[in-house]
Amino acid sequence: MGKIYNSAAESFAVINRACLMGSVKPKVTWKTVLLPAIGIAAFIIYLYLFQVDIPEIIATIKTVNMPLYVLAAFLVFFDTLFYALAWRSLLNFLSVKLSVLKAYLYVWYGTFVDIIIPAESISGEISRAYLVMREQGNEISGKVAASLVAHRLISMSVGAISVIIGTCMILTERQVDTLIFNLSLFFVAVTVFFVILLILFCIKEAWTRKIIEFAFRIAEFVSRGKWKLAKFREDALKAAKIFHDSMKEFSHAPRTLSVATAFSTICWILNLIICYLVFLALDFQMSTLSLLGIVILTQSIVTAVKSIPVGVPFEVGLPEITMTTLYVILGVPFQTSATATILSRILTLWLRFFVSFAVQQWIEIKAIAATSPSSLPNQTEKV
Image 1 (cartoon, one colour):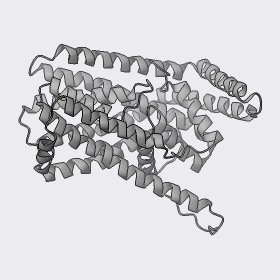
Image 2: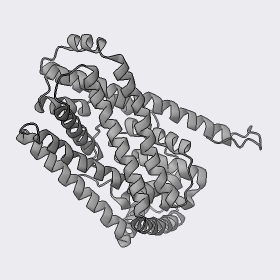
Image 3: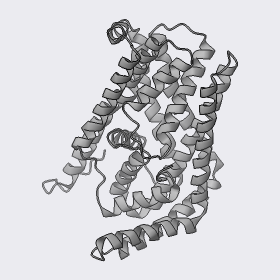
């Protein structure tokens, strides 16, 4: 299924190379603009092909219950906070101290990178690792990688469980479409597969070393020996040892893992509430249990697709098409499905994009100011 970007070994190797060899600051190129434009066009064509009345959608959006919609927008900031708290709890356990504010801002920074870089499997994680190591040094790269891998493991596990819960909630109300039932089983199986694969890479230190050695051999071959990579290889192997030692520490820290899992679960619940509130803001009538089941199952499947490392851009266009289609199959009228999808994505994509862009710009401006030759020696202000 494509390159396994989410494997612990490759995640570590990419993070370590990025932070040892240079910046990972995102650069806006024509591809950055083109891919979202194609995604938006694809969604519009999708609506057109199914004869959705776009003017009616616009008219419906104008009548939305704004207090409920604003509440949903407000929750976007809280679900990001709990996501950051989960990651920070893992970092702090490994003695990598990061304030709540910095963890929160770094997660927003990673969100921006996730949105603008296709196939987001580890782009956000790399940016967060870069920010922490830019501040605290490359010596902690192994610990940072361990925290990110553990965080991803927890998030994927919570997502797999939510697919099962959503399916069961719908089954209590009515029969689930065979396609949806099979799709749910498929994504649970795929998620479990990658979780097991991640765990294996966390356990098998020899596998990590082989992948690092292979990556550096490829780099040397491509550069025809011009790149002097011996020091980088040595640093990467040392970091790999720290990474595996850190993962072993996690295996003996049930309390830390429980706290991180609790924060991740709260984050996920808030994300579901955001989508649920959108339906309430539209005054959509359906039993609470059925609607909750639909929201949980749909969001779980969409999130599962985004987290599977197949190298497919899945941030603009495809999520909208997937959400609308799943809502329709699960019994929501097409017009309402499309409207709810648009309103949800305004919050979960575009609101996140503009906030994360502002955070990314502010962090980089602060970093440039801190390293500027004109900076005064006593300027020690931190983010």
